[in-house]
Length: 367
Image (cartoon, rainbow, N blue to C red; front, side, top):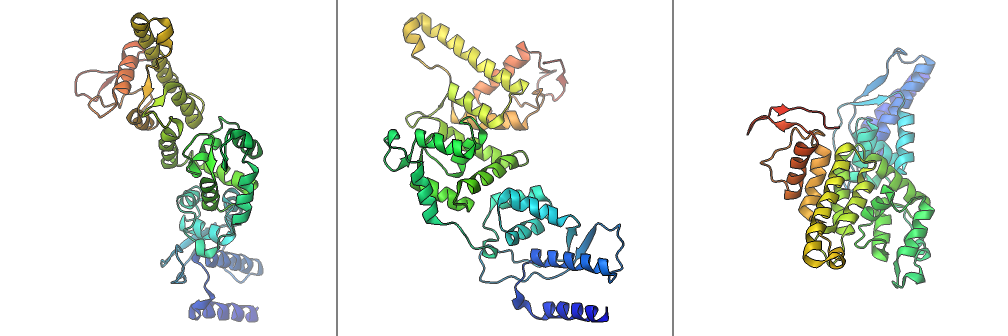
């Protein structure tokens, strides 16, 4: 037992005096946790079994030449007892290596959701802890498997190839993960990938296989619920992705399709918004029918979603209250959204302001 204590003191002393060991702060935390756990088993430590976390105080050693690796002095870290389960989950969801995962978890104080947000915001933050392992030749070979001559797009993945790619990933075309894939690859055209988009996207995710790609996309999709910033970024990307190159606005049917993909099952306010847009379209068609006749009126698309309406609708539907009681009529909202709010208050029994410039609302049932 005395020898064990002496050995531990020697190792700790060497750690303090010999920084070239180059352990990251997270790896050092976990080693300390494991050492403490072993010490508990042999009776070296006086910690009680009821304690759940162990405060650790140390200095982080990091190479000054390493780019992206955290370079900070850590005064204290809390390593939970179930750190191995948390680590295992993080590795499984992100497919990051254990050293990289340890760094992200330590930086997030072992909050796995926050750690995943940090990871997807900057997956290369601790890149020096785990060199890239993507095989560029494998990525290019994978790309060529989905280039289909029937698409007549040359060296591009087209609709036929995209369909096979989604089938291999286990995604339906209307699955949000299919849209996330296009977003991550920064695709410019619907149902198409260029070689550069494909290889850059795979390199950014640090994968070179279908299995690895699916794991990363699935993890991104799961993280959308906890990260509104990423959901908004996906929504902003979709406007350019969904509209035709020759158009400045998004076709109504296309807009509704993508809203369903991004937001999922329609909540009451979303259903009422879409019903309102169809109502606007019917009224516009009736006017055009009188002016141009039925045949010509059908050729005209009268309701379009502008970029301004598309972008601000995300704020309206995600950040606003469902009863519209916080809607600022003096705010810089698009006309179409102003008209929808007026429609809800006049025809759907949504609460109305009691007086001008008042925050007090007249509450009614709107379901």
